[in-house]
Image (cartoon, rainbow, N blue to C red; front, side, top):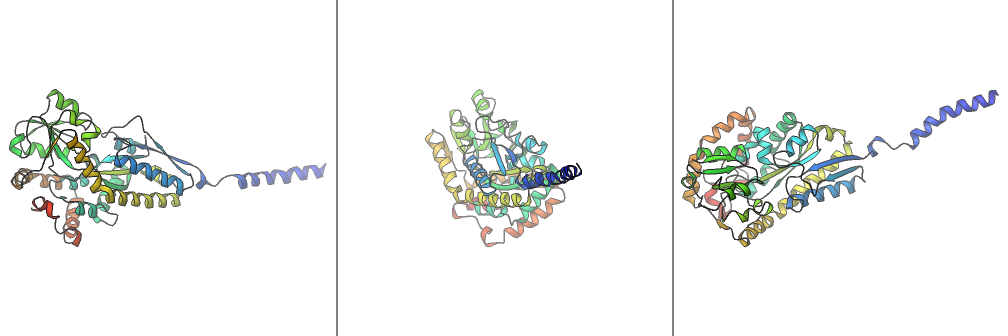
Length: 355
């Protein structure tokens, strides 16, 4: 009987150890990351995110999984960021203008004609950029979200079907749709009566005549079938069209360090890939717009000079909103403009680079 008792006692000691040996380590537990995307998964951004997810799942051996919402867009452009910050979703792709609404320093990219050619934008959003670092620090502490990568989207345009909105005089006292605070300010100081819109609502607003024109991205023409209601697109390029892919900070911290490293590396690759393809993607968007019967108009140098003149007060207002980060961002911007990559705009864009 004592022998049996001793065996049972030893077994009681060994069983917990066997359970520990058989249990998978904490790092092997699967993390599920839900992704919110306000545009089509077939878009260039959607394809980029899908490839990002595929590579991360492969490199982590399936310990990180992504849930991509393909059919139902539960979050529109206005709701993705709030979904990430509240933890309703873990990752979201949000337009820069929405990020700037919650993180004012990000609005530096929305200052009219400040970031006016691709090489400058690419350098400013690179992983080594001081501008990017300052904005991402503000995002982390301000909205509890970490930026994984930045990617270009298209080109800022003004769509219309009844007016030729090449200069401020053309929009004076007219109703113009504006998708964010920065564009609303631009159109307002340049004489328009602004109406808040989202890319998805522009179609109905133009069709009903509630607005005469709307600021949008060239990719919105196909994404939301705006070619049905607009016949002209002014390629104003007043600000770069950018998206950021962000992750909820709590979700990030729940990942193992090795998984965080993989996400960071694949995110950097995703940014490089989209920039390598961007010129072709944008050209195809313009070509598709033309094929749908929409005329593309490039503003003349005098038109741009008028836009610059009327929008001059916006820079001072931005500095107030940006707070202590504002002077640091402009110091970094000044240094960047002395680099070889960013001293001068390409030949086709000289009239955009003069300040």
